[in-house]
Figure 1: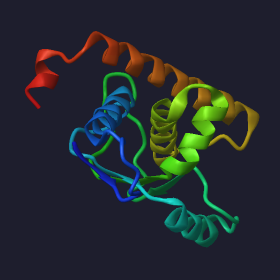
Figure 2 (figure 1 turned 60 degrees about the vertical axis):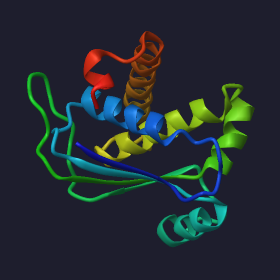
Figure 3 (figure 1 turned 90 degrees about the vertical axis):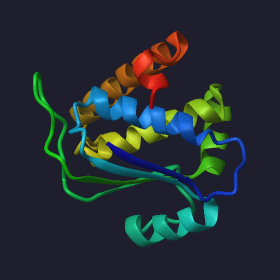
Figure 4 (figure 1 turned 120 degrees about the vertical axis):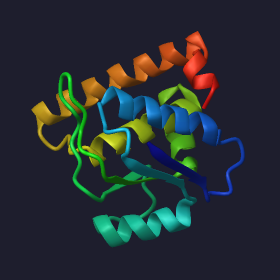
Length: 162
């Protein structure tokens, strides 16, 4: 997988390597093809406001935006998705910080949540309807739980060699 993580926000303390590991974890959990490409970009409130106004026609900065490219879908049992360019996930750390404080779990956990949420949107999940909301947020919670468990366990031999 080609995963690019770029911190263009000017916010210090964003662990790009950790965010890349999370992204890989989410893509693996969703059985996305190993040749898929994904970009995660962290931007400050100005550029995020511009994107939010331009693409969603809503004022002010938002927390995360997803821009799908090849309309890839997750793989099913025993199979992976097709290869291709998944798209871009854009995250605003300043908004994540405020939301993380309000939620009581901090900025890093909020960025993890937003990144996972953005990737699920790239894979076609949505939460406009109650059933969609239940499915997407349930899946998001499962993936974040398995991510927390894998991080607590530490790197495996495979991960250390990357």
